Image (cartoon, rainbow, N blue to C red; front, side):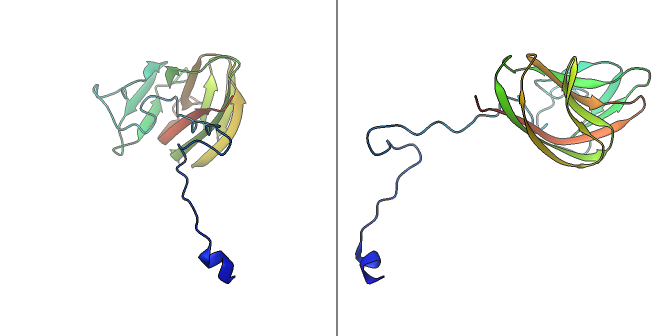
Length: 151
C-alpha cells in the first residue's frame, strides 16, 4: 500500500491522446433541437419544432411542452433531425398526462402510458420523429427529449 501512495499518477483529460497515439471517441451528441423546451419565440410552438395535427401546445410549466390534442386526430410536435439507418439511444421524460408517444410518422418508437422517464435504442427508419398524444382530447406534458446517435 505504501508503494501505491508513493507512485506518481497522471490525470488524463478525456480529450487527451490515448496511450499509443489513439484519440478517444467524441461523446455522443444530442441531435434534438431545443429538446429541453427552453426557447419559445412563438407562444404555441417551441423553437426548432413543427406543429402537426390538431394540437394546442403551450409552455406550461416553463421549460416544458404541454400538448393538448384538439380532438379527432392525433396532435404532435415534429423534428427532422435523424439519419435513416443510424442507431440512436433515446431518453425522454413525460411529467404529466398519459397516452403519450415518441415515434416516426409511420411507427411508434415508444409509448408513454404514464409520467416517467423512458429510455431505449432505436434504428431510425425515417428522418422525422414526433412527440404527442395517442388519443383525441389527450394531454401530455414533456420535460425533455434526447436522441444520441451511437452508430
